[in-house]
Length: 123
Image 1 (tube, rainbow, N blue to C red):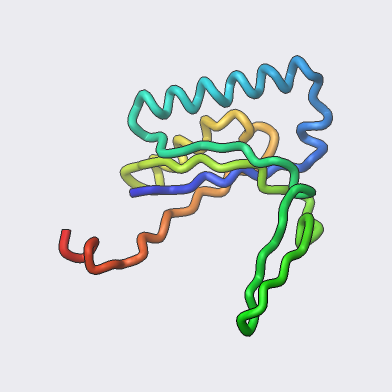
Image 2 (cartoon, one colour):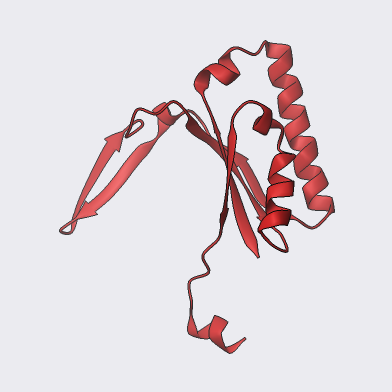
C-alpha cells in the first residue's frame, strides 16, 4: 500500500540552523531517501520551496481564480513529501520516524486513496 509522508515544520526550525547544519540535514535526508530506495520503499521524495512561491488555483462556476502565496497563516508549513510503499500503517509510521526532519517538525502519514477505475477493478 502507498502512503505519503508529509513533512511539516516551522520556518524558524530551518532558519535557526547554520549553513553547515543545513548541509548536514540535506545530506542525511538524501541518504535516507537512498536507503528507502534500496529497500524498495521509496516511490518519490521531493522538498518544496517556500509557501511564498505557491499559487493557489480555484475553478468556481467555470471561472479560474488564482491567489499568490500561502492561503492561511499557520505555524507549520508543508516542506516536502516522501511517497512510500509499506505493508501497513505501522510500517509507514516506522519509516516516517526515520525522516531526518522529524526531529525538527512533524511528519503526517496518510494512506493514498486509489481511485477505482475499471482497469483496477479487473486486476
